Image (cartoon, rainbow, N blue to C red):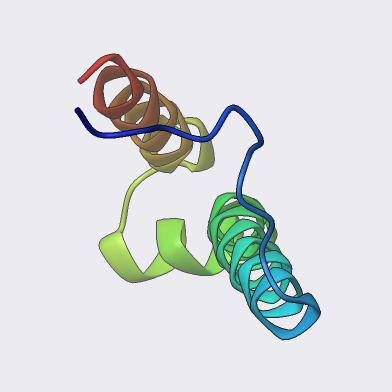
Length: 72
């Protein structure tokens, strides 16, 4: 019969720092992606030749995409 340890395995300090850095980078990219569209909204609206509120639907579509992706 195989014995199992009741103590949780601990990660080395280097692996912990790598995991935290990866999480930080991922959140930075996602956060920047969300806020970048808002800052460029007037340029996007002008480029697509639509009104600013119509171009603002991109922010809503992105938020819905994140919400639906989080359900999976």
